[in-house]
Image (tube, rainbow, N blue to C red):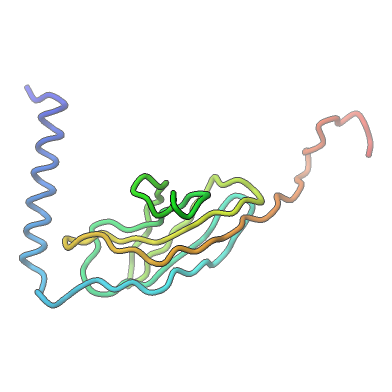
Length: 141
């Protein structure tokens, strides 16, 4: 019977084999190139971003973010998976705090390694009051 550790080991081996097969299938001169990170929209709790990719086929792509530039550029930064299609990587970083500065950068992982875009700072907007926000509904303002 297979245990959890056996399954983890098997998955690592399969990923390594896939990476080797992809590396062999790729042309030697082909590398990955990332276009500039673009911020399409900023709300009080989300940032919509994208970047262009050309060259190697990505194995993984997305966005790293944090409230400091050093944290955003570290391996332990929070990450959001990107949607890849037709040379564009798009993503939405959600669950952010209003009126807060975040540092964001895009990344892609190919069989040759991980590549990053430049890091941009973006500030979420103030939250607009919503109907029902009044904590004391019996008191008219």
